[in-house]
Image (cartoon, rainbow, N blue to C red; front, side):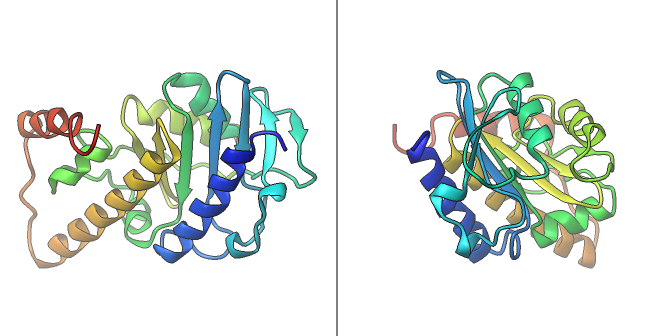
Length: 213
């Protein structure tokens, strides 16, 4: 089976998306890119993550042409491909409909640096303007908005997180959902105090050496 390890990882992290309450049913999507082979594995369209098997995960080339798998790929294949083309360091994309991040996105707000964990994305989480799901316009909006950040909110839709591994992209999606919840709750009580850009630069520098080597 082509991209066997990547396809099995997508099954595992798809189920984690559900158990971590980052989406429901078959919502959202995940992909992993093997740049040496010029292939990517992506979740199929409309299959519940707890029913998903590795064989159902679709393999396509970087032009989006099918290589292996009988299922139809995610309707959002276009923006996955666009992100891989724009950012050579990216090897994984996670798209969620997590409740608090999506709530902020439905207000058409960016997510500012209310907590240092926003550093998983960068200095903030920018907002991509709304476009119908699965369209070229949505892909264009996402790639224009994300810049060098690792996450972007999709207006009236959800969140996209990227990373050098599927684990990193997933961790970013989880941490940004936490920050979105904190921001929502803080806004419900008063005016959140934001961290300045200098402090966020220090945080992001420390993140680069955080954890086990």
